[in-house]
Image (cartoon, rainbow, N blue to C red; front, side, top):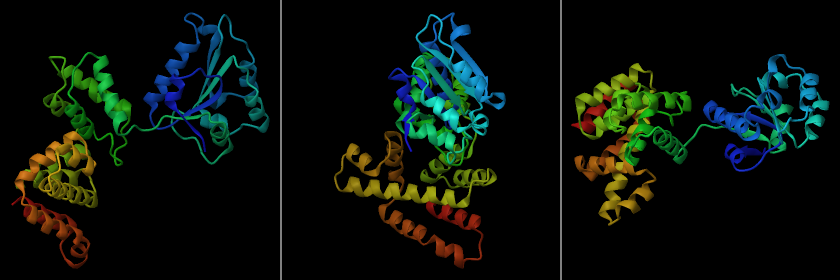
Length: 336
């Protein structure tokens, strides 16, 4: 399957038929606005821009519209919402028609709800012709750039480390949270209101962020590595009340202990900070926290505790205690 990267829309002139689909509606809406502004002259929208609803659109009507030439413009643009509904009744003749669309036309089918069936002919047609454009959930550097770019355009300052903090606390990267860029944008807009000095810092972030399981895990790990038993148990209980799986909480503890061991070993072997951070595969913000937390633990204790964690499956099978109580006991042992 051939998927055209959505950024390509902004890099070259386009014509013909396309399918817009994917998780991130904000990215899709931005691309729609870009296509409108680039290819339809201001004041000529009545003649050169059409929007149809695929739920009640016939092939004949769409094909007739596609044959109308632009007026005082190089291109004519047609958007069809509800691509999934329209695709249910498409005939073979329609695909032949799409193959021969004139260079003057841009026809875009919009799957706004990300429901298009990728096993059916409609999707496969656009994919085969490298005209299926996905708007995926962002990750890594892309989400970092989104946050920074949005705040800068609004005239607000934010440090690199606070962007990482905000990204992690938002829970956008979580596989367990159905969070979109529109949701994240709403969170950012709340921070803009709270900030009084055109700067977003951690105090503003902490006051603004909506509580979710990922932000609670963030708080839980901080309390755990600061050896704060009471707060660790309190945050653990919050996670449990938010229906966060015990297994995921446990896996985060394992990861944190492993990072602390890696840091201790690397630094004792003379690795510089940049080398250690790259070897550990983590960002600057998380690395600085691990560095600070490492002072709270003896490396020998971390190895012994890590070995216990690796054998936890056996504990789960042989003990009569619930997983919740067993994890509470591990938390107390780690923070005492």
